[in-house]
Length: 98
Image 1: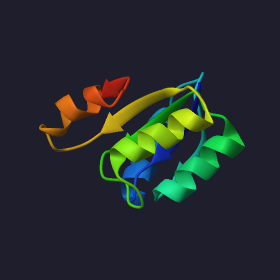
Image 2: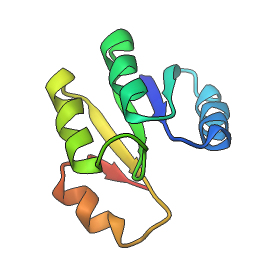
Image 3: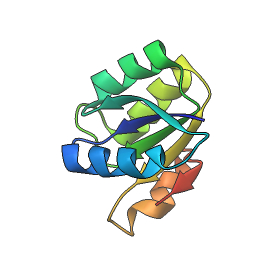
Image 4: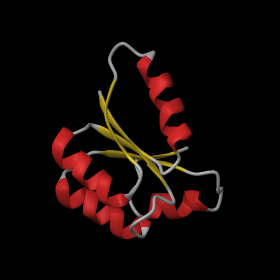
């Protein structure tokens, strides 16, 4: 499984990367701190899964989900500390919510 980590917080990306590195069948192929970087990473690395911060800077989440799906069909796991974001995440097509 190939992952891209998209979160403006470097520490969050680092921690996720450390955790994913413990899995033998997983590789982190890219990181992004904003929407523009994420789209570029998707186009370049062709990941299987994105861990996506609900509040990634640079684009509204609903528009970002559309832009992601325009590039390729892949699994999107939305990350948020806001419980109220969960219903909206499902509504815009998230594959999982953490």
